[in-house]
Image 1 (tube, helix red, strand yellow):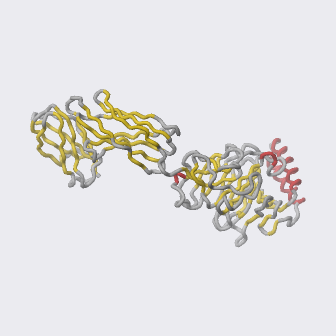
Image 2 (cartoon, helix red, strand yellow):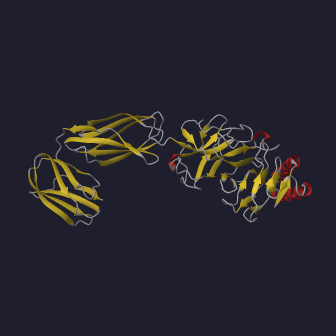
Image 3 (cartoon, helix red, strand yellow):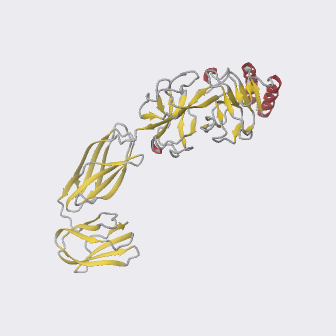
Length: 453
C-alpha cells in the first residue's frame, strides 16, 4: 500500500504514536492505525505525480511493492537540497528491481529491519543494502548519483557539494569516478523530528558497476566521505568480483555523508629491509625484515643448488603490520652451497622476487639428499643433489605412485658431494619417488619425492 503526502508534521505525530504502540507490543494495530491516518489526512495527489515525488514530499510504502509491475512508468524523485522521498516503513519492501526498474532518486527507510534500497539512475540499478538498525526510530536514506563525485555534487546537507576523488586517506589510493551514493542518517532529527541513527556498525553492501579497468577485486574497497576525505570502510578484501553487479561490503562509521568505490594501491609497496642466511645445527636459517606491509599476502621460500632451478620449500604468511615485521625459518641443506630467494605475493595475486642469497653448509653429516626442480616440467631434467660417505656403483631408480619401477640406471657415486641429472621427458604427469641403492644392497640417503607436470 502506497500513499502520497506532503505534511511532515502529520507523519511525525503518527510515528510517535506508533512508537508508543510498539512499546505496548501492538505492532499490527500500529500499522493499521498508520494506514487509516495517512489515508484520511493525505491529499489524493499531494506533491507527487505518477511515480515522481516533489521536493519536501514522500510516497510512503507499508507493504511489498513490485516496482516492475507498472510497465513503462519510471520511479523518480526531486534530487535537490530538499529531496522528494519514496519511503518504506516497518517490513515494507520493493521487489522486481533491475536495470530497467529502479528508483531514480531518494529512498528512505524507517525502522529496525534490514533493507535493500533499489536505487539507481533509471536505466542502471545500483542497490544499497543495510543490516538491521538497532532502534525502531532509526531512519536512513540514499540515492545513487552518477558521475565523478568531484564534479557531480552531493546535493544534501551536511557536506553538500563536491567530494574530490583526489582527497583520500591511507590506505585508499584512489576513488572511482563512476558515481556515489548520497548517504543520509536520521540522527538529531536530520530526516524528520524523532528520527535517530548514526549508521555506526551497520553492514553496507552495494551492487557495483564494471570495475575491471579500475582495480582487481582484491584491491576494491568501500569508501565513505567524512566531510574532508574518502576513508576505508571495508578494511580488507570484501568484493565478490570486479564485474558489473558484483557486490562490495563495508562497515559504516559515524559522520559519513556519501559512499563510493575506492581501491588500495595495486603495486607491491612492501620494502624488504634485509634477507640473510646462516647456520644452526647443520641446517640453514633464513631471516628477513620488512617494512610497509600494506598489501602483502605471503612469502614463498625457494631453494636452488645451481642458482637457476629453484624449488619451493615453505610458505610463510605475512603478518601485515604497516611498520613491518621480522621473519625467520629453518630449512634443511645438504653439504655444500645452496641459493635462496623469496617469492613475495601481494593480495591481488601479483608477486616479485627478492634478491638471491647463498650459504655454504660445511657439515659432514652423511647421506643428505635433495631433488630439484620440484615440480619438474616436461622438458627439464631432474637433479638429485646428495652428500654421502658411500663410494662405488649404485642403482638410481624412479618409481611411480603405485610402486612400479619406471626408470633405472647405473651411476657412479663418490664420497662427498654428488649431483645426478636425469631426463624425465618420457614420464607422464604424476607423482614419483627416487631411490638410490648401493652395490652393497643398502639404500643411500632417503627416498625423494617429486612431481612431474
